[in-house]
Image (cartoon, rainbow, N blue to C red):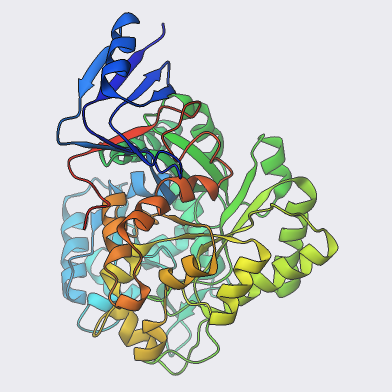
Length: 490
């Protein structure tokens, strides 16, 4: 049955260059059919037996996007013990011990959002410390950025890990200290999440979609499967996508493009990880971290492998996306793109880089010249950057200040979409827009209208969807978000 809805007598921000603002929009059966004067649109809606809604002081904008969400991780993390407010190792251990005391015998102690930079000791608990407070239950704790995990000895054994597994960190005597990176981290994550049955995983996807809808989001770019999660999640998500309250663009983070093609998808990757994160000191830089000169982070792939991913995408009509935060990872992605385009020139490829946190000025210009698109998270620096913060401590003043230069991205002409990396930061486009306009350093700021574009029309462009989403225009989906205030007003 056709549904007809008119939003009238308010402000309608269309994000269209022609007719950028109106006062009414008419939607029929999920498609925008008219934008214009309230009187005519209300009468037309009434003739069709539809519902007329008075906007009043409210403002209608194109449906909001979040360009980088871990739907499975966000949903399952809702079930975990939140470690974010812990200020010391003892705080973490107290929460683990309480769970060990009260949980049924077979239940795992699952912790989330551990931020070692907030702990006064400047490090997370060791396996021995976790063993002491949880002798009966396996313990599995995820770092805030998902780039490492902590386990006790019981969980380490259940995951089938050994001291020879790449990424297992050891103490001074060569014994596993409970901290897992890289392959060990991926192995543990997949094993843990695959313990969840299909019903639990479906519930996780539905939870995230519902949480996004409550924040006014109409489209999620979901980063699923691959090294961070389980490929077995993919058919569960695709099987329920049409029943969710938001639209989903799926970026499957597998290394195998044949799986992506077989699933009928166009997007590939998203979290093909070229490096790690700032918090865990695994994002790749040419110079050491300011608070730990023993490391400068590291790359997770050889250059030739990255070029191969991109060349495969270009030859198969796929959009591939890479996680790249540190300067060296950004450079590696662009080097690979430049080399692949020499072999297989594709004009509108929109090869995508997630985060694009700390590029050089030259690489910002190179990204624009090569036609790369960026999916970034303004709330990263808003919540974790500025003098005295973890980013500042890790990187030092000059390097930290140069990070996530949104103003420079836009001035270079790069298409930039906004997201959250939930649940690293919350699904909340309004927070993202506020963060983009009010970064820790004013030279990186964008205008309010530019910030809205990052979460609407520019976000749609990053996934080749600007013909059907991102603005309020006849013929596009009727995805409209109604806000209490004008986000473009200063």
